[in-house]
Picture 1 (spheres, rainbow, N blue to C red):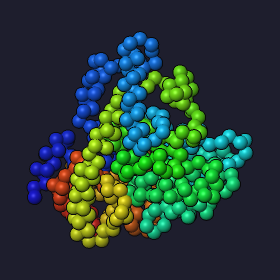
Picture 2 (picture 1 turned 60 degrees about the vertical axis):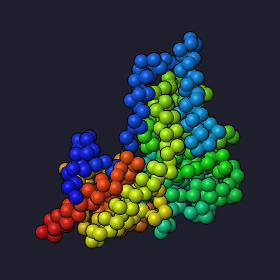
Picture 3 (picture 1 turned 90 degrees about the horizontal axis):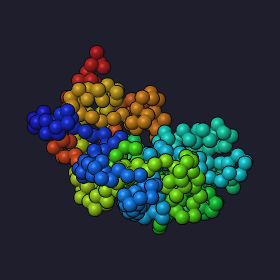
Picture 4 (picture 1 turned 180 degrees about the vertical axis):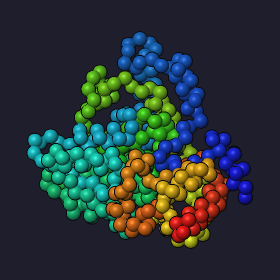
Length: 391
């Protein structure tokens, strides 16, 4: 295969993009929605005249579409997954005036982990649960840490570097069997829509998402809540989002978020089939390269593949691939500049395996032809870098 031809077909700077866990290409209709918004739908939904009321009506319908994606009872639109997680962790807990206890996993995204560290700085205590050998957080391990003063448990739905899927409903149920007053939150940024989840049938109190992970725009996120789950504002002002998130609404971001969610839900099975085909081709090719190790579990989320090329530094490989027109990552984009990988430590990876670990992530826009092209480039670059390192 002439993989240069595949690169040229991509059009955007002759690049094959395999970093969809970092962000995704906006839906095709985003341009149309943006143009319509700029021309006719730019009004402030908080005003009282007709065009503003029309904007508010559209926005309410879009809220309904977004929350229906996980069958949530309510949704608060925010600016991103990070704000959403901060809002839940710092406002969705009881203010008793006494030190409280929290539980999280050792491999949470930085926006949850750093919240937990801040809670510790404020005098609270936090238990961090390690994944087992299958890469997952197990309900009984979490339940064993629940105390009388455990205010909140936060366990992510899909691990953002390995794709491991945690059974958040089973974990939430196990927690509440020990302490029915303990609230349960899951960071759903990598799981939202891609991994089916029905909030009404679960014991999860809070679930969070980010639009740009599902082909929406950056700058839009959401907190999904059960009706009885307490939640308080972090931002005060005009009382938007039912008084829980003040500030003029990002009507464009909300419109694209709703359209992206609706499109993904309609095509979820077809998208999964396409991603599975690309993933399986990539795994087959990677395992044909000597001294490689697949980190992701077999039953993980389809769009994330973590793999180690032993004997190669992942940062060097990333730059070598980038020079050839291939974009992958060495982990979460939010943590890519940190040398020590907390996630790898939690997973128990050896220094040798950790050093060579990369994350390749897919969307339905990727093709098997692209996977074949990337495998050919990988074989060349891995062999070259290993040879260079031995000199």
